[in-house]
Structure formats: C-alpha cells, structure tokens
Length: 591
Image (cartoon, rainbow, N blue to C red; front, side, top):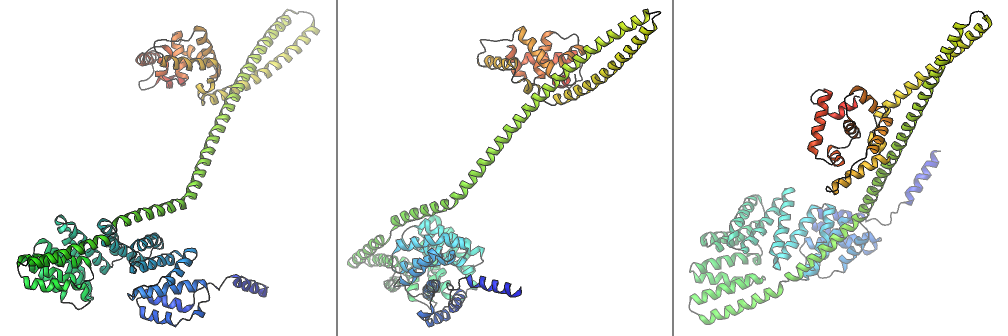
C-alpha cells in the first residue's frame, strides 16, 4: 500500500511542469539588484550563455533584469529589442509586478530616445499594474519620471500632482531621501508659478534642508542649495542667493548639475552691479545641456551688456535668447501629452469597469432573484392568508349554522318532553302506557343531554374561531365584499370630486352592519347590548372605525370634515364613559 501512494505521489509531481521556470542565476541577479548590488548582478547576467536560457520565462526575465541593471547604472538605452521580449512575454504570462517593470523600462528606453509620447504611454500603462502589485520602489520611479516629463513639457499642475503622490508614498515608507527630492521638485514648481507661491516653496525647501542634514550624498544636498539660491534670487534677497549658490558649487560632482548655481550667481551679481563676476558665471552656464539655463544666461548677459553700454553685444545676446526660447517652445508638447493622458486614462478606466462588469451583472441578477423571491413569498403569504381567512369565515358560518340547528332541535326535544310529561301525568290506570312513556322520556332526555353536550362543544369551537378571527383585520376579511368595495369607491369619488358628494343608502348600511356582525361573530349585537342608547349613525360610525377606516376616509364617506369626525369620536367616548387616553378603536375591540 505504501508503494502505491509513493508511485501516485511521483506521478503527480511529474505532471507539474518544470520547464517554464527561471534558472537560479537569474534569481540571484534579481536578489542582488533589489539590495542595490547592481555590479554583481551585471557580472552574473553577463556570464549567462544563451544556451542556458532554455525557457520563454528565462529569456523574458533575463531581458528584463539586464535592462533594469543597465538603467540602474545610468547606461543610455539605445535598443529596445531586449526589453520588448520581456514586454511581450509578461503581457501574456507572468505576474503583475514583472509586467509593470517591463512597461516601465520600455518607457525608460523611449525617454532616453526623447520619444516623450511613447514614454508617457508606457509609464501610464505601468502605474495601475504597479499599484496592483503594491511595489513601493516601482511606484516611486514611475511617478518621479512621469512628473519630470510633465514638468519638462510645461504641464506644471500635472507634475505637481505626481510629485505630491511621491511625497505621500515616501512619508508612508519613511523614505527621507525620496521625500526631500519630491519637496525640492514641488518647491521649484511653486517658484516658477510666481511671487504668490514663494512662501510655500520656502516652506518645502526648509523642510527638505532639515531632512538633508543626515544625507551622506553631497549631490542630494546640492539640489536643495541650488533651489534655495533660485528662490532668494527671485525674491531679490541677493546675498542669501549668493550664499546658497556658492554652497552648492562647493561640492564636487558633475559640473552640468552645477550650472543652475552658476546661473543664480550670475543673476545675483548682475542685479547687484558686479558685472565682471556676473559675466564669468553666466558664460559658464552656456556649456549647459539645459536650454532653460542657456536661455536665461543669454537674457542676463543681454542685460549686463546694456548696463555697460554695449548695444551690439546686447542685441546679439538677445537674439540668441529668443532663439533658445523658441527652441524650448518647440520641444514642449503639452497639448499632445494632455491628449495622451486623457486617452490612456479613459482606456484604463474602461478596462477597470469591464473587469467589474461581470461582477456587477452577477450582483444585479442576485438582487433581481432576491426581489423576485421576496415578491413571490409575499404573494404566497397573501394567498395563504386569504385562504386562511376564507377557511375561518367558512368554519365560523358552519358553526353558527350547526349551533342554530342544535338549538332548534333542543327546543323541539323540550317540547316533546313537556308533552310526554303532561300525558304521563294524565294517565291514571294504564300502567303499561306509563311504562312506555317513561321509557320514551328517558330516551328523549338522553338525546337532549347528548345534544346539549354537542352544543357546548360547538359553542367552544365558536369561541375559539372568534378568538382567531379577532386576530385578523376585519377590513381584510370584507375587502372583497360588494359593500366594502362600494365604501372605497365612495371615499375615492368624494375625495376627487368634493362638489358631488355620494353617500351610502340605508339598505347598504344595513348590509354592512350584517356583514360586520357575521364576520366578527356578533360584534354589532354585543355593541347594541352593551350600549343600548346608540343611534343608527353611531352604529355606522363604530362599524367604519372597527373596519380600520381612517378618520380622513370616514370624513370623505360621510361628506364632512375631519374635525367633525374627531368631535363625534370624542362624543362617543364620553357617552361610553371610557377612561381618558383610551382610543375609540380600543374601546370597540373590548366589546
């Protein structure tokens, strides 16, 4: 038996495909990239031979990891043939995180190629996937790169929204470096928005500066110092601007990143009249790769030339400023990006709603079925109740007939017994006839006793049926009768046409009283017996109240106001000598 289970287990294991799994070096490389050891990961990836990549998953993962490692090392992407393998595979197979990464790094390729529209498209495609995968690092990278592209192309509001999302993510994960960077980016946007936003920008930069106290990387501090220099230069605080710009220049690093500080120094010196120093720093800005920096440098150089009285040089600088300004406008594609944002957001929303369409349909079907079940159950309950009402009324009528027949037979038996008793008393000598009469009398008395017992049983049953009927609504019992239908029609007619008042005839009132008395097992008879002074109108009023007609409905039936109906109710309660606080319907139910 053990051998059988062992063989079965081995068969099950053999059914599990092992061909489409990544090889172990890829797993090692992925782990190294995640902990920041990109060089070691690259070494492992470069040692992998094509023959080792014997599955589609291994090929796709190898392509993704190699592209990711190159991007981490800031290698410019020149060919997308590798990352497209990953995109094609993970769009069809694989998990959501790998799919999101594939689209992100494909977007990075387009970003390096300056194909902004396609880069934005890939980033927007990757964002919902990264959110679904709940990968913090990828979510940060996507929003940061997308924010940068939006800002570079004049979409300041969209960029600020994205950097705000980066801030929220960084705060949630207590990532001081990412938080400080997003604060600086938002501050730069507010500085560009104008004077009314300088205070907000300053608040962001001071917060970033406080976070940067613990940073070991000088470059991260340099960014904050440069932005502070920009802010104070725009505010006209030239000494503060020069201080922070010099502090930013003091760090070693890529000179291209220091062009911003040179621009601040050149602008500050130009505004303070130190034209020689201004020219030195402004000319250094001309080596920047950033067109904004070059354009602003030419603008300041034109102002310096004008201040020194060199109009030809000023005109030359101004023409170059205009040329770079036009180039900047040509490079910006805000309209295309806004249209792209709308299209992709719409398509993603459509896909999102499609995914919930089946669930929504299922929910609607369940709701409709429940509603149908509820309606059917109500109808069955109503039908059962009506059948019960008909049964109770039928039983009650049958009992009443039986009781009347028994009472009639009992009266006849009593007459027979009296007659036989009289005959017996008048017989003097015929003993044989006396014996016969005695025997007949005994038989009649026995029959009378049995009939009386049967009558008592029938009366008990009648009392039980009365109790059951009292639990039901009298109006529901009589709702299908012609007289009750006539009452409802009169109420509706008088309500809609107050000028043409219809009323019940005496015969119809008599029928109503008989119907109520029959169904309620003698309510009217008991009411008359308890309150002998009641008039016909009082009985009609009590029957309407007993039938659960509202006072407003009674007013329409009688063709009077609700005030008069309330007065009549109070008058009846007073005549009945009912305790205060007791309603008329409660008093009638006790009858």
